[in-house]
Length: 96
Image (cartoon, rainbow, N blue to C red; front, side, top):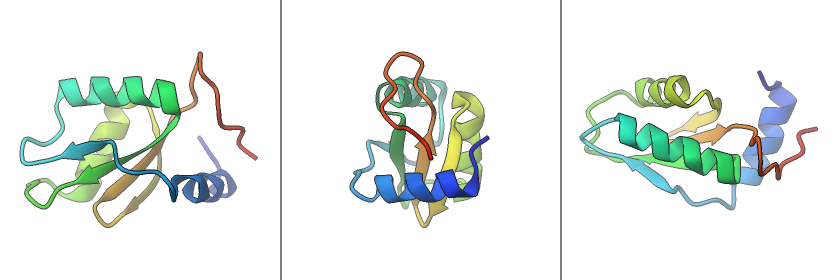
């Protein structure tokens, strides 16, 4: 579990990131969560965008992704989810 101070630090780092995944009307599926897990292993910090045509609630989408990937939910703001997961082989971010 990451602290609120660490979340604040990660939010600052995420400002320059662009969303690399989009959740649409198909919702969250196994293929998507596998790809998100792989991206988290490479990058540690990613953004996921929830499109307007997604029928699920934004917080449900965020918690589904977190549950499947074992990532930390840094922030859910509007239609954007910020996720963090410490990399085993490619550590880039040192948390305060």
